[in-house]
Every structure is written in structure tokens, then in C-alpha cells.
Length: 422
Image 1 (cartoon, helix red, strand yellow):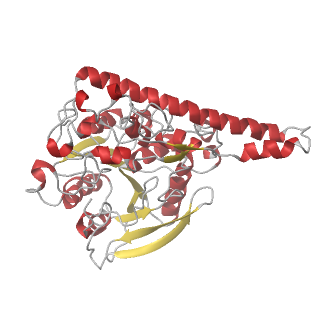
Image 2 (cartoon, helix red, strand yellow; image 1 turned 135 degrees about the vertical axis):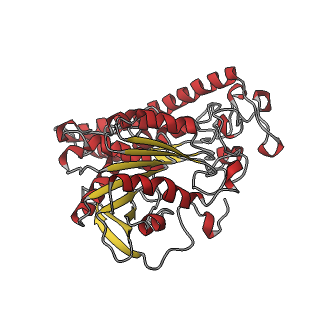
Image 3 (cartoon, helix red, strand yellow; image 1 turned 60 degrees about the vertical axis):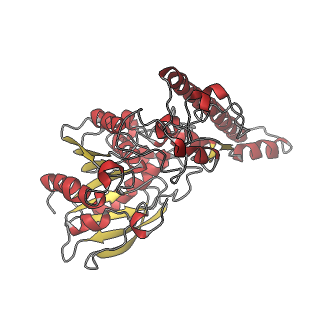
């Protein structure tokens, strides 16, 4: 990916010096320290603030901060406890970060808090809103791994609105569509079942620089089923490891352990096993643009302009994950942070914005999210000529104005002003 200032994913090259910026230090609902940058409009103290967070990304210099602050809204971009490292990420504990951040904003005097769910922030915030709406006794008490989470023991302040911007259906759902089902041995990064290999010419593959790949309906049906089967296999392994450690923790609390037994049991009770997950960039839609048609170009944001085969056999996503982190964050079958599961509980005003040239999140998925929202006050918009990071892209990208300015001026700010004046 180009690294010139104008194209860095979540940053900008210039900002009005009149916009006030404040480094803030706050904490999650369970006391974990967090930090961020609060942007305030020149000369005014607004009643409404837009909050941006991502499970592992740093949104303290989010590209929308300058435009929203210039329009009269405060903007807080903040980190989470898993900044730049989701290897042991429990989404259920991330909700404590969101709760503490909203409480901090309420204490600062903001009457209105609108959540900007950009990319992975969308499923994080929808999950939060679902849990915050429940009575404490009905909130989740455990992560999918069985690890305890104190959601019922903390204050989870409600927010007033939600914007889903280029938001996928959930990190687990995203990865489920990208798992390479041709993996035949989780401990061998190159062993392949050619029948299920989207990178095999016999199945319709052509290298990106040579032209379009084409995959048959029969191949895709078998492929998608095999992706699910692979996820189930990884889940079973992760669950077995979590259950084994839990058994030893319970055994450690039982009376009667001899001095000779205790070290053996204690070490296994403490053990947290990690998965190595290979080949996680294998969605046929990256190379066959007839699938889920849109304005996108071939490739993926995770292949950095190259054929996705480079990312699939290279770094990929979710490469090193604790068993519990996998189940909570990257399992498409176990993670609770799934928009189609959580949005039916979201009743605050909601805006869904689809970037139509996004290589990784497709208009059909944005529409599914919109349809799942329970709010009566909901709006669906498409931003033409924009990729996932709202850089100009696709057929309309070169002839339309900067997508980042357009999404603020034409979509988000008007939507905010209709509901909450600055």
C-alpha cells in the first residue's frame, strides 16, 4: 500500500490549527488504562461527541476527526487494551473499554455520544449496544472460551446513535469468508487439497496481473462449506485446550492434592495455548469480480496491491492467536461480535454507509447489516468511488471529490444535524 501521507489508512496530512486537541487518559470499566485524542471545534464546547474505537487499531488520528470537529462536533479517537495486538483478544473484555470510555465522555459533560463504527469498530460497537441494553443479570458472564467476564458487574452507559462506516459483519465472519479450505494439515502451511484451492488454475484461478479469475457455482458451494468445516475444526481444537486448562484450574482448587501432584496440576492450570493459523486470505471475491459485483478492483487491503496469494501464503490475518482469543474474535462460528446477531437489539438511530469500491466489504454485506438493524430511525447510504479506507478508487474515484470529505459533508454531518445539534 502506498505510504504517502494522503493515503495512510486512518490519518490525515493537514488539520485546521484552530481545532483544539487534547490527549486524554481514561480507563476501562474494570480499571485498565486507556488513552486517546479528543478534538474540539474552535471556540465552542459542543454537547455532542463522536467516539471512534477499533478492537486493535489506533483511531486517535482518524481521518474523520478534522472534518467532524470543523463541523462543530467533538471527536474522540481512542485505543483499547489490545492495541496493535489481538493475539489474546476477548471481545467481551473490549466492551469494558467501550463502557469506560462512554462513562468518561458523560463525565466530561457530553449530552450526546454517537458511536462511529468504522471497519472492525462496527461489530465492536453493535456488540456493546446489545449488551448495554440488557439488565445486568442478563449480560454475558463468560466468553466463548468459558473465561469469566464481569459485564454484569459494571456500568455500561448507553450511547445515543451509531454510524456503521465500511463495517464488516464481524471479524470472525470476515475471516470465515477468507479461510483457505484447501488446508489439509493445520501444522503444515503449504499442504493443499487441490480440489478446494482457489489458487489452482484448474479451479478457475488466474494470477491477478494476467486477468480475471472465474469460479463455478459448484466449486463455490463446496468451497464455502469447506471453509465452515475448517473453522469448526479449529474451534474444536481451541475449545479442547480451553476446557483442559479449566479442568486443571478446578482441580487445583480441590482439597487433597499432594505436594507431588500440585506442581503438575498448577502448571497445566496456568497454561494458555496458542494456535498458528495459516492461509487466511482466500476469498474468491478478491479475484472474481462477477461475485458480489461492485466498483472494486481485484485484490485485498491485506495483499497491498499484489495478488492475494501473496497474503494467503505470507503474513495473513489471525496468524498467532490464543485459543480463547480465537474463539472470541476470529471464529466465524463462535464470536459474539457478529452484526447479524447483535443489530436486531440495536434501537438507537443508525446510519449504515457502504464504500462501493471496497475490496473487502461488499454492498450486499452492508445491506444485510442495514436490514438487521432494529432501529426505526435508520438510514442506508453508499459512497461511490471510495475504497475501504475512503481513498479514491473504482471507476468514479478519479472524477469525484475526496471521499473522506464527501462522507463527512454529504452523509455523516447532515445525518447528525438532523438529530443532534452541536
